[in-house]
Image 1 (cartoon, rainbow over the protein chains, first blue to last red):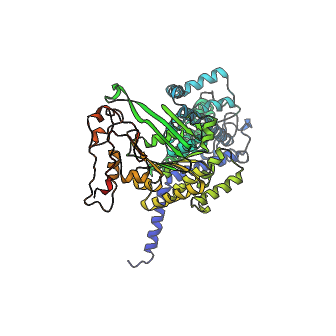
Image 2: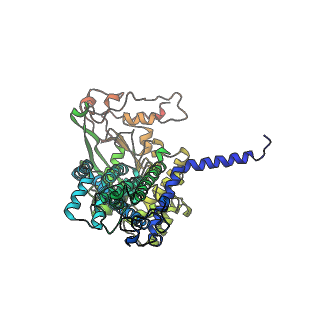
Image 3: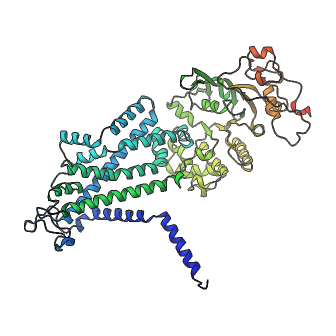
Length: 293
Length: 330
């Protein structure tokens, strides 16, 4: 015990331990990845080295740097000589925009229907619960295929369609929480001073249940990314010349033996992004749920 | 004398499923069963009784936040309904509620100031700056300094929270405040402060109170008239001093006898036997007869009505005690 600096290092380690307990390394990595992806999609126009639709027919199926290629195409090029890195950056932006917008739509639908069910009860609630069970019982991929087959495919329609995914879970959570909140004093008190239902639900109940809803929304994002990838892989999602992560994987599968890099990099981005959002969502749920603290 | 609030034959019955689970026969729970009283402007009626006797239900029926099954509530010459129409909304400005548990009655996501302003905002009173000014004035009147304006409810003590609830009720300048056990969730040391505040506010804003409590000593301190409830009915009503010194109804006698006092030794205590019967199958005749020490054959068959006694009080008992004050039995 001659070393006088020992206590201070102990303090240092305990502080570090406390930091990592609040912010687990996996969560830090996931947050970093999400931040990176978000920045890439914001600054996509400045980051991509080529236009994502630019053809370079003399340099088709060029290998990426790590497979012995040149720095002309960092992640290689595809069968038409389009730069994979540029397409990847554009795809990340497209997929994130779709996931984010459609989750917002799903949340708006889910919260409204959940509040309606909680407010009116009776047959309104039964109808909404029936619709929720209906949505939950049918595989969404089949609904999506049917809608896209009938109405054709535009980006707006596609985003709206993706917004139909996952609303039933948010509606169910909202209904349960709102019914519980309605019985609590603050909501009853607001209603008893003569506040309108819009005010009671919008200004009092919604902020009080928002943390749980945010978690549910976070967990919806990776599912939409995967769904979008699946539909695009089947050729029903984002249509060329636009590009998305699933679309890249789908068109890359024909070259999986000769040029696996076309498919590899978007697949890796899909896996990392969905994993990161899920990890952060789980962590948020633990953080925001006071009963688990 | 015209009363600010007149309640006549108030009834609230709940249809519930009886014993036997899913297949039990539907039965009627008589939460409030024919309650009548009147409160003149500027006065306080104390409503006492043990838990489950229908005090809080009466409060919500009076305010029109719960639909009644019978009877009539007249407030300031107008009937109070439970349908949320224009008149109902207008009446909210004149009648307000003070809640038992201030923490649950306040929204923990909003600052104190926003919550005090909210009733004025809901009723569209004044401009934003005026409302802010009014809120500060009211907060000052209930003893909250302006530094609490931007605090959140969980940062306040119990007494301060109840002051916020009061300020929220008072910002609309109501005539009637219904206080549902306003102090029972507070520390004993805070209770006295809030009681004194309520008395001061009554004088300052000429408020009328319907004061609900199970604490007889507090009721005696604030009320100008007391009504004792038992199983959804008023069993005795009258001046607090007379009622507490010489209870006429055996149930009131038992309640008064249960007040802890420093001089209990040698005092005859009329301790009650058993629990109050369930409001689902109330006993025939006087609902108090199974626990009453003086019950006779008539009490088992005939329900007593609330009748005036010689000293101006009302009691629902066939054999009211008049001569022997309970407190002087020692």
